[in-house]
Length: 579
Image 1 (cartoon, rainbow, N blue to C red):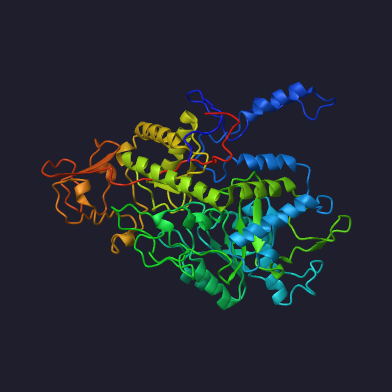
Image 2: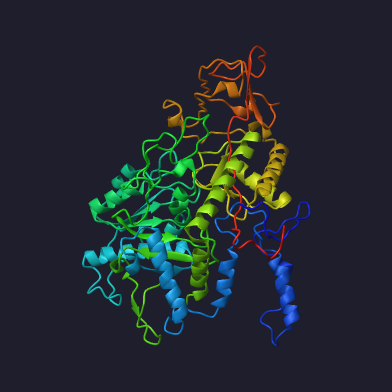
């Protein structure tokens, strides 16, 4: 772990921060120049525009991060190469093949040497391609693609559909629009993981395939891919796994040395053992956690998985853009085979034609410079950041929506409008880039390797100030999106139910009896409560009574929060600028 990093300091004057769009005066006044400008003038303009870009100093919204220096160096070496014409750039082509082989081995492909796949611009392209391959397979199987030649075109049958979990990335919406396919969203459980029963209920004779998520965008959870694999085999459907985020995390969890993950792939089947604390380090003061015997396999060790998308430019620490699509065998990815009469290879099987070989070189370089141990250290660092973050949030009276599994944390609030107001203030006043969850009203934080502990401290100082300014500090302990059936099966979705609170942590004189509070309107309980405590006075359990003075129960710092640090390994420390 490292306590410093090399990022340039960027200061933002009070009440000013670059908006999403460029200021009008940042563009040249004229259009395409009649005569060339001086290099000095051009690069002065570029320097000014580059100031509008982030340096990741205050970014907790993005799943991308600062690339490893080895990746940057390799990228520059191969900047001229084009993977779309491999006969001219054989070195870049060989690097791409090596990356595909190594990633296939990482994801437990039975025959990594013959794995099929290629580099893409990222998971959006990979997911679009996977959906196209599913559609092509369906049409060919139904005899609707002629001889199988991509030059043969037949009208698509009506009603083709793809089944994805409701937590799936929006790229699947794009894929279905482009392919003219209906997208069917299966229900999710209280941890926003795909519900296999719901998936099964949506399958019909026109379903082209299934999708599972390994490291969801909003919460970082892993779908029950083993169950989805069984369903895919039962219905003879392809199963694509979007592991854009989790692909460079999950394989290294057992190597982090964490007690939580020591049994992740512990037995011959890759199943978690019956350990009530396995798979996640939940706050010991809470009842809710994922199923203790969850099967977290998501890769080619499951026979139903036919393709996987993963992004080296996320937790793989490669340059942008660097994505990968891996297929179990060539039959999965034949739908895009096109004859290329003027290039050095006769067939091209990718969505994009010209593809930079620099991404393949960068990905190969960082993978081989870090190795499994380096990536395990990177994951360990980010999980530590998560622990620090959760702990700091608890001190501010905030609790995650669900127990964070990977390095993504969501902090819930009353509604999406409140979340939007907080994000706007945090950006405009302090320069923080924080995202919002889509499925619930919550702030979403991604603790990537560029984050350090001081960032977390500073962010919470600023967040506390914003909550006070918006008169939200008394309501900052909002845990409405709790998976309520884990605490009280009879509680409604709008109730607040806290059961089995270790009361000695809140009130030493309290008995060991569990506390159950329903339908509490937090801002009505004690308007004067500080932002790190929830004061409930004279709690008649079915209502609140702010004026009562008999017995008070003060629940302070009820929720534990974790945080994580940044790693850019001792082997390749940042050297560009110090912070």
